[in-house]
Every structure is written in structure tokens, then in C-alpha cells.
Image 1 (cartoon, one colour):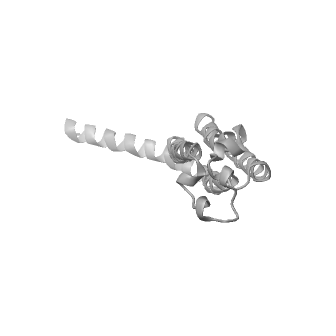
Image 2 (tube, one colour):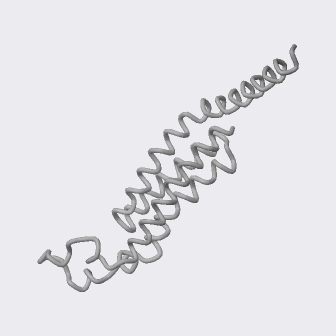
Image 3 (spheres, helix red, strand yellow):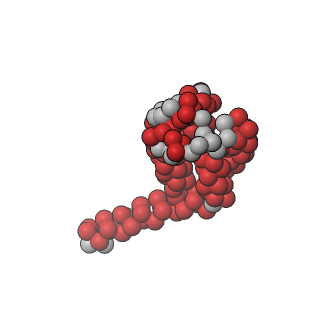
Length: 149
């Protein structure tokens, strides 16, 4: 189970880091990270707003939700929980696409990575168990050699 927890933990760290960075950048006025001020069709008032102002709490929730969802299989490393996480991420991506638009792309990318982890869940879980046993047997052999047996 160590391997599967480690894999999900890495996904949580990656998604969480991206979410924190994206949420921080979304608090800036759009003119700081887009070329909205030179686009004649773009509203100048909207150019001075941040994405957080326009999307509100839904934007922040859409960014932080994948991190929270991916942490569940770390705490409860069962295959069914992993697949439930994938299903929830897919539903959340659809809802976020309707509510906030492009932010859903992070949910889609996270759902793809979570699907891969859920697909390899059994193999990673077995590898974690096998690795622990072989490491233990290796240490036993080293101790036997040190004792001269």
C-alpha cells in the first residue's frame, strides 16, 4: 500500500501546487497576464478585473477541489475509492465547465492522471507489499552474513 499512497500523494502535491499558483495568478488583473488591453473587441473594464472577481468562489473551488479529491485515496487506499475519485473528478469537470468555463481543464487533466493511477492501483498496491517483504528479507540476509551464518 505504500506505493499507491506515494503515487496518490505525488498527484496531490502536483495538483495542489498548480492550484495554489493558478489561484494566486487569478487574483491579478487580467491585463497583467493577458494581452486584453490591445484587443479592440475586449472590454477595458473587464481587463482590469481578475479572474477571481469574474468567477467568484466557483473559480477557487474548481481549483482546490481536485486536490481535496485526490487526497481521499491517500487516506483510504482502496481500489473502489480510487475509481470513485475518478468518477467524482469527471462529474466535477463537467459541472465546472458549465459554471466557470476553462478552469475545468485542470479537472480534466487531473481526472486523466487519476484514471491512470486507479487503473494501476492493484499493481502498485502489490508492488508496495512485495517491496516491503523483499527489503525485509534483504536486511535479514545482511544480518545473517554479519553473524557469520
